Image: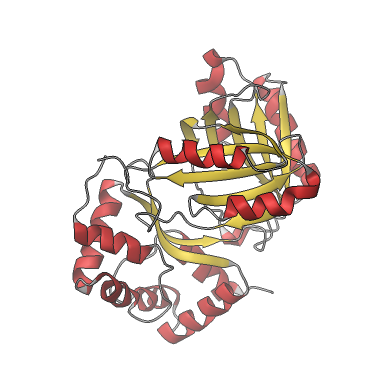
Length: 165
Length: 155
């Protein structure tokens, strides 16, 4: 848990907007945040070192880049095997995200892997291979038919409330 | 749009370890033997074409004091548009997809508190045509947000 100083919250708000594509982008961020450019650079680097920022960079559209299909594969795995199977799925190069999640009534699946491939059939085949290898046969692959929203989280935005201290 | 070797190098560098320095695009340019102007020109084109979505920090949600979850809703097909409009109106909703399943609307929430997540789910659950909405919070992350090497696409 972090308690940020006021100027840091101002900087986080400034970073909710995309980094401007100009020669000195952090100078513009600094202007929005009302602090010097060097302070912005130093603070962002510090957050990267401490893990407050996981990574700094561009988000790219994988679909536009030729990864034509992605499927959300969901498995129902015995609790005792979640750790082992999760580690196996995460180690596969076609998997970009892998999480264990709480199940819900009517939704028994507790292990999720986002699988990327050139086609939906190929993604299904990859999931089937994973099911064979792990022996976890209770699974489904869900494909997205439409993207309705994709945006970055807005931290400390107006109206969203403040995180618990 | 077709990408040449320089485009791919730029994509690779802006995705991975973007240099947090005064002149980041100059730094990238020097790395690949181009000018800063050329890098910016190409990057703007890649952004306009929708290949690059946004350059910025990916904060660790928990370290920010925020909480996140994945939600699945069963929405009557004839009101999907209206429900999507309502759901997407919350700034806390970061992603929303239609998927081919009984649970057909899948959205992620990043919010300041559990209470806020509960309030949003209650509000969504009361919308006409929403049969059911469930929250599926992560209990363990095995892999997160990996970027794919651009050079290996279409293999």
